Image 1 (cartoon, one colour):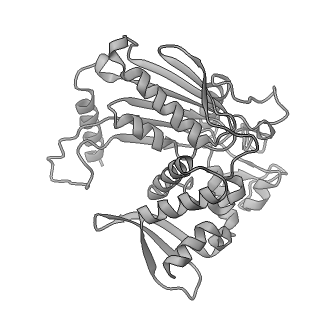
Image 2 (image 1 turned 120 degrees about the vertical axis):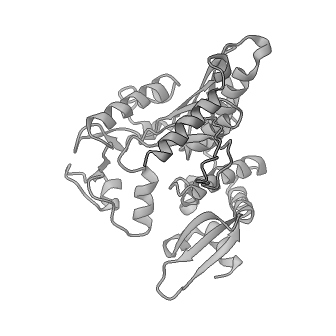
Image 3 (image 1 turned 90 degrees about the horizontal axis):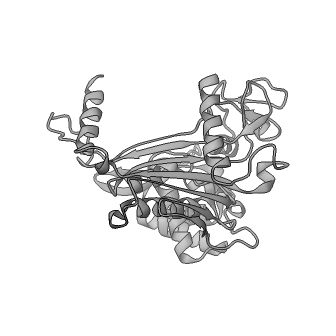
Amino acid sequence: MSNATLKRFILNPTLQSNLKFKLRPINSTTTCTFASIAAAAPGFLNIPIEEAKATTTLALQKIGWDKTDASLQAEIMTAAELCGNNQGLVKMYQPHLMAPSPGASKPIIERETLTSAVINANQAPGMLAAITAADLAADKVQKKDQDNGPISVVSSFNSSTSSGQLAFYVERMAKKGLVGIAFANSPEFVAAAPGGQAVFGTNPLAVGVPAKRKNDSGDDDGLPTDQPFTFDMATSAIALFGVLSAKAKNEPLPPNVAFGKDGSWTTDATEVMEGGSIATFGGHKGAGLSLCVEILAGALSGGAVVGQVESKKAAKSWGHTFIAIRPDDLVDDFDEKVGSILETVKKSG
């Protein structure tokens, strides 16, 4: 393959079914590694991450985004790819789904207090709504001169697509010395009970925490000693884009993660997307967490909620809620305490 092939991959996503890609740091140089899964195509091609970002930015501009919004979305998708998260460049598989919605405009602040705000995304994609909300939550809690207190809450609604990898936003907050917590709801893809009707989104939650590790044990994992801790999970047994990826590559799903339209388990991604549903993880515990996210990210944000609309998918009003906490107001040496916990857990086996 050549660089032209990489650019055709992003600009002409019909090639996606013949390519498998992963981004990763190689020899301390961040690169984008593409590997053909076609039988006749051996080896890997290493492409600089910045080139992957630039090419994705160009693709997004070609479908209607201005350079600023295109560049931001490309950064978020590339970051997801680096983590092996399936909210990455697979989003470009169907570029029409990434194009601006008719009548969409920039997110705006609709309600605001010193410690809270609500963002009307105006049908902008979830990634732009989420970054606006996360940054505003961080800004509010960092204004010590206004005596805003140590906690802020900012939500967003009326976004037209997924926010992508939630870890991106909470890590961004944690790098500012804050605890970041994020919840996101989405259209009906997930059943609350085995084989039931889909009512939840995949409903992810994420936490980002500043940490300072001594890293003097000789067990160097290559991470900076001030690398934040981030945790990001869907409350579904598999993320929606995991199903879409399996469908695109004609691969079976893992067992016991999704149902067909008859309510029985299936590993056929197409059957799931055509009247089936995804399971929650962990049985009733996963269903309970998914319900909590549905309430905190849907009802609390002003997004579309089941029972009040014909369908959340048709309403196209995905919700997010971000909480920022300034730990220094609550405890001394928080990041060192977190670092101690992380190191001890790591050494525990």
